[in-house]
Image (cartoon, rainbow, N blue to C red):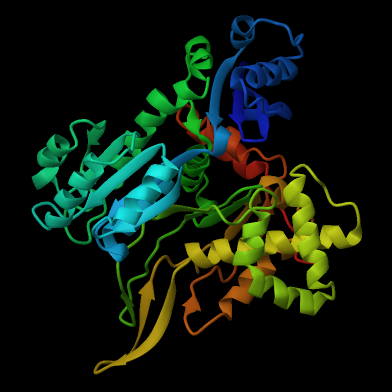
Length: 470
């Protein structure tokens, strides 16, 4: 039997699991978590590894990494922060955002058309880890691209720039920005309607490995373990990507991961079902999609969640009885003390409502919708975004959803969303709900590249189906 260790270095906790690979597949032997040591990520990594292996905390890291195959991921210090520039919001900018999020990044700002002085000041203030610069089909519009390249060349922006736009002016863009680090890759949209995400994802991952890892103290781990890390969301994305290929009965699935700062929504299902009565407006989105929302979180982002989600929260408070001021006071309390856990029935309810709100708004932004309209040929539906109606399994992960005791915390807000507004949201219609009870998805995602079938099998086997009863 082969021992395999997977470690995920998060912003707050470093999670790890010891797995055994045998003829029957992959089995979890032990799992634990230790606080992430932000001042020195290697120290927390070593503590997690020694605890997992039952070794003394002073055991040299070199001795620890020799005990098993090791794979790891990291979202420490907030994850991979990406700013995106495109031309048309509904086309190249949307593609840039999709590419950044599918590579495991968090889009912290996005801009369309010509960059203004205010846009440049925002970029300089944010100082993202990567700037994704796209726009135009090959041989198409170049005016805005060259104009933006000149403005970026004169800016104080210091991060790497990934250029993934009109290849006809790629060399000119690189020349204009010759004092910046510019990495040129294939166009995100070489022809109108053609989506080309993979080259951009690969370049973003290369930058993460070469620059971000070194800047966060992980180079020692890479050198000793011989393993390259992944951004944590990319690890989960890759697991969601392979599950249907090895577990066909899970061919249409979604996963929602609520953290203290962000909420990630993943889906693996065909985005558009071609029929005579449905017309797609805009891009056909990829089968596997990730979105991440930086204003939706249970602790770090609790204040912004209160603002973003107030209409939903206000309606739920009217239905359930607690007062608005009590909820606001609770949000202030958990924002000051990020490790705070609810201590009363009312506080447990408030946490539940915050989680519901994260699900509601993450789904609102991830899922597409359609509107009814009439043409000379009769009634048709105009679809925008991704169709999730065929999703049969919705998986809850993260601290709150992993511990959920019923499906209601996900099912209820999705049902509310279906009846929201004039546009019908294309949400799961007959889904079952599951909990990633042991919080294994990020750990198994680290193993996908070498052990895809085994990781997919254990991921599915470890899920707990949630009861619909409240």
